[in-house]
Image 1 (cartoon, rainbow, N blue to C red):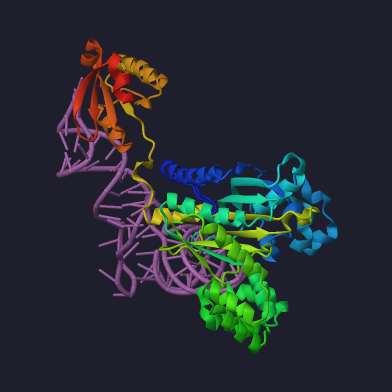
Image 2: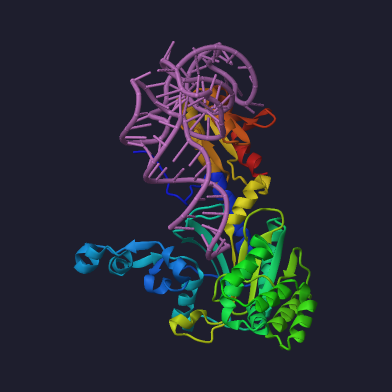
Length: 447
RNA sequence: GCGAUCAUAGCUCAGUUGGUUAGAGCGCCGGAUUGUGGUUCCGGAGGUCGACGGUUCAACUCCGUUUGGUCGCCCCA
């Protein structure tokens, strides 16, 4: 059969795995500096846990797992005859692959409430799956890096998460702009212009501002039945730049804005310590996910055409669907796959990321091959990354292999060397070659 | 779910209005060089031209269908 790989999935070569590990390790190290603890949850969950949390479209994108056994025999004959997938599905599948890390986290918090200390700060770096159409920066299997603080309403965490974004992207050397807004501000804005019943439509529309321009947004709003007067008010709101102008705007509309107060408080924290990246209050930022109730964040690379590299926000009622109220949390996510793509595109990985051997042994015949096997295992025992070509093949072939794996040193062992109990160490970069005694090998490579 | 676009050797790509045996570069294997790679020279292997069907005396080329990639839209990381 022809070898193939499924759409939206990828293989990773050793070099790529090392590059990805570098990204994950960088993110992880920052999370840990801030006192977040790792958790893991299963790859698949009950569909009851997963469905209904991501909207109708989201449910369609869930990968479902077929029931075990002779699952069709238990299906209602009428349903089978009808050929209606929506009716058939609940009878043949009860499990699905997780779609994100947030919903499993909510389940986790509720189930382990008594074992956790609140505020609970967790991070989670695991793959998730979506039956989405693959596109630039979008895959069917990809890693999410989530970090959340749950069980506290303190706006310090909002500021802390902004700092985490700043630290991670500084370490990765990717200049970004961190945008911040507050869902309450948006809610108050729709109230100010007398269109609160269109809150969702308005947020969805203005979220696309940088993509479809005001003309497109205006059209969408009017098509949704929003009054021209309210649309005018929205345009007015969108032209606001900075916290000062928004303060005036709300004053003008006689609204004592709770959202604005929160934004200001977050900035109060942020002013206390320096940031490397741009942070910008952006009244047009909305974010699609409807579970956000307070501050919301989004991060975009300054000079790369690649959607958002991360996002997040505060949610007050995430655990509510699992019958647990009053658990306010705030969290952000890193789009590790997109970070990987951006860094690849722009060749931003540190040059010394590879993890090569220290030395490759090359022997010329059976007896030196066996001798080299002993020497190799000696070095390995001392923590030196050593390898031996598996057979005393032609020297040219062995050297060529050494060259292609980019090993810095080759240890040549022939009859002459073995008699003198030395190996010829060749520096593959300079071509220089020196005889080193067996007993001095460890010291030579230990630096 | 909707739309655009592409698919030829392991990789990157040529292939004229449809016409004999489908090419190049890189890579791979072997040799020049039986103890020396990255340079050079010589030789070799490797293709059901994504798949299926149609038009034609003749299809990599035209038409239809399908699968897959890429890029938009929806949504999202």
